[in-house]
Length: 79
Image (cartoon, rainbow, N blue to C red):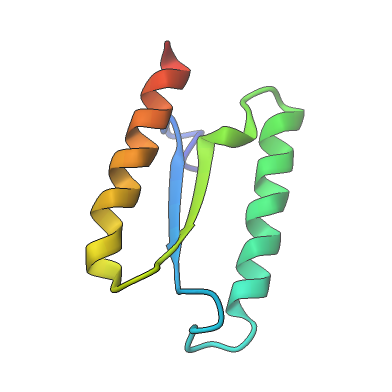
């Protein structure tokens, strides 16, 4: 849906590996991200338009760094 609404990319930020409150959430999320990336490749948009980050420290500290990296990456894709 984000791409249908005009988004250039999607950033997903999840728990540190092995540290999620929900036992199967990490596995399920990783599978869904991989499927979404495959679909983007198939339709010619490119899987690099989805970034999936796992927090290394507190989420609040990590988010701004992840956002800046993803924003730069998308800027490079746009030319």
